[in-house]
Image (cartoon, rainbow, N blue to C red; front, side):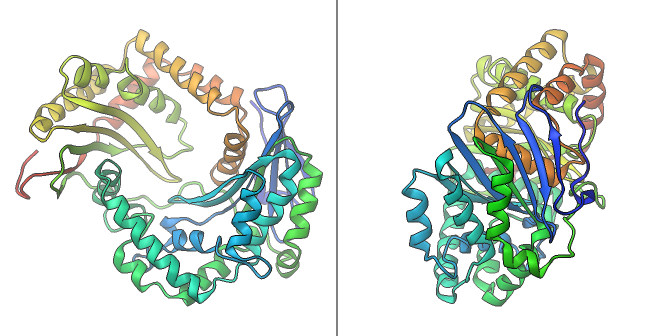
Length: 444
């Protein structure tokens, strides 16, 4: 299996090869610049595009309750102008070359990216780097984006199939960083001051807390030189800093069970039934991923067959697992008519109980592996996916994995592995979140 040194242990201005081409990936190299800024690239022969991204190692779980939503707020503001470019300049330059450009905030990191034709990669590097290194955070733009984010929260509140994820996380994780919504709340966004946002920008967007990742038709040394030039002042100011270590492990996160109902006048009931899962570096993660696929990963999965095909109780039903540095969530989602919810829950609980006591069949194992490996490879063939993969490995793993490494680990999963992880995970106390037109005293 391919191996690579932990990013934080590499000397500045030394370039190392993380993965050689021919093992399911292109040539992956990393350089750590003075100041701790990491530049990781994957050269992909035969493509005409390149994806470039910069990620901060901070996300919504790094906020306290009073400032919930600040990482996402800052994400918005970095598009609003720098010392040499207006917000319109930024968007016009990237739109003018047909770039796919945006940003997103997760619980554990924030990423800004642009996918362009290979000839336009220098422009993408210059513009995205300028956004992160030289943002002005204009007071007027802070107030404008405050209104935009409040509208975004309102839009999200009107999508119960999405909102139920936050309701479930808030219920099982409680008033902890993992339990709070990434967007924040109306109250926290309304009260966030520009000074607090500036403080977060100054603390979280230093070179040692940033990861530059690029994949596609590119030359590593050229990308490093362009990034060095774009961050020259920042690197000089933090010359002795080291890169942040990957976010792995942490203090135990409390997990609650029971039911949380959000009463809404909806046409459908939306539910998530789940329990604590596994951290992303847990060696049993691959077996749990296979279990999730067998239970609710496709049209042939147990839950889809039992809930939708045999009984016609729901249009959408699926199982999935979310992993973090120190914990995870195994979840089952279903959307159904309000008067069908008891039957849907009964079938889901029955199927989870069967898997907990008996695992899955050999046929289900083979089918789940095939589905995962097919989607894994096809979903990783684009330059944006490869750039994201580099980022995730730098942020949360002790080394980089090739695609072949991952496929081999899925292939190695046995029925006994799945049975053991099912017996442990699916017997944990379960939580339930429901959004629907029910009285608050409704029992599920």
